[in-house]
Length: 213
Ligand SMILES: C[S@@+](CC[C@H](N)C(=O)[O-])C[C@H]1O[C@@H](n2cnc3c(N)ncnc32)[C@H](O)[C@@H]1O
Image 1 (cartoon, rainbow, N blue to C red):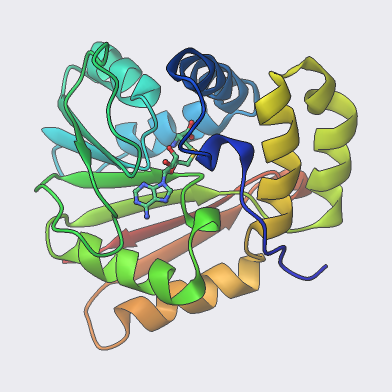
Image 2 (cartoon, rainbow, N blue to C red):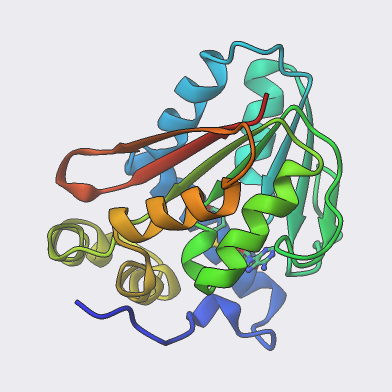
């Protein structure tokens, strides 16, 4: 399957605020259903370095960070291209995570962000994170026919219309396990970083964890 060159409905800057809020809230529910939220919590709880502050890149409206702050009692900060709604209950900075200066944190997360980026931008994002964080947990989809079929049959009918369409586009524009691993290796070449790459059953997600020592 070739990588799709298309944008997602939620990327449309002219969408009304209430539609955007509903879509992000449904997306947070989808991340829980898929086990992605639990996978992030497992990684955070297993951290060898103490975590005082978590940065979420491409955080949307901050649903994951709200849960992290509540359950782990740590400081949180979000970063997203889309301006923060006035109703946000956590601090969210606006900018491009691949190029703009990022705030300091013990760990940075990027959940379903990198399929939005080109290959050079994924490499830039990883290098950008290394300037302000010692650890990056990058969770994303896998471009593969198995998750595409599973999503279409079991999940898509129950989702908000935007997330139903965007889910399919997202899988088609995501990176294969080999592509993402190659980009991570290129990004950290010459540094002392350690990469751990895991792929969930049926290719429903992949996680690249990078630690700079
Ligand atoms: C599919 S949504 C995922 C939202 C959230 N992480 C989640 O999993 O529910 C992707 C998010 O990444 C943001 N985004 C896309 N490109 C970005 C960039 N270059 N820098 C920062 N955020 C970006 C979008 O605005 C959007 O909120």
